[in-house]
Length: 358
Image (cartoon, rainbow, N blue to C red):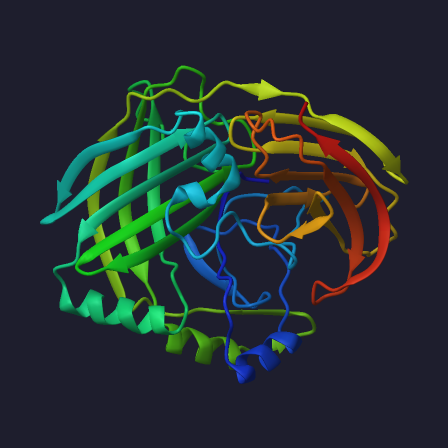
């Protein structure tokens, strides 16, 4: 099977009642066959739309856990991500002022931080286009602060674009005439070389009209639990905004302590400066849908899980969440695996364990 890249933009927001009713009959699974760089919109919980440009094997399911939100809240910068915030507290996410101009639009990169498997950056530009300003105001009123962004990433002067196999959360806020964007990308494997000198390129922005999006979602034809639909972009910006970065990928790692293991086995966890990668094996029933829930000091966390997958043949579960190797707070994280229904509601607990940085 050819390799592809998977980029996901997930919206955590309230949606109209008629759309929510449509969602209940128009559930979608992550596709596992080749899709070129085009927008495929799938009706997942609370209006998630997915841009598929990557791969999953025949037996490995990239699980879009309806209980999770990819990465960040209603964005006020990348430091809303707990892993990035800890790195910033340790003065490892430096402020920048890198400027690039293309097609009369000047974009300033204000913050950038990366490991081998995750990167995050903030950027900004002045809004001079009345059409964009009105569209953003309309979408913000509809509690939509996401847009599509097309990126390229190059290491050590190579012309090979390494930005692939990645889930991306791209959000924005507007203050006066200024557009403030934030991007957090989680790669499915180690992509960024250690000590790499990186060049980041922004190639395109796409914005959709939220009203048109909700209407298309509500009217999407469904077959069983699957539905897909397309929505034309209301506005697109194209260009070649390039930023040469001197900061190197963060290399800090830690091995969290595992305890209180119940009905799972082979638990492994490794933390880097921005996230923790966890793998374990669980007894999965045939045709079941597993999903991980994370509790921090007994409080359920809604926005920590960034990437989740499972192999229905071996029962292997893998997920990433925003616990930094630099976090020495001593918090205890309970990792609970549940079997869920098509709407993301837990049916029963499969197993659990606890994890903490020491």
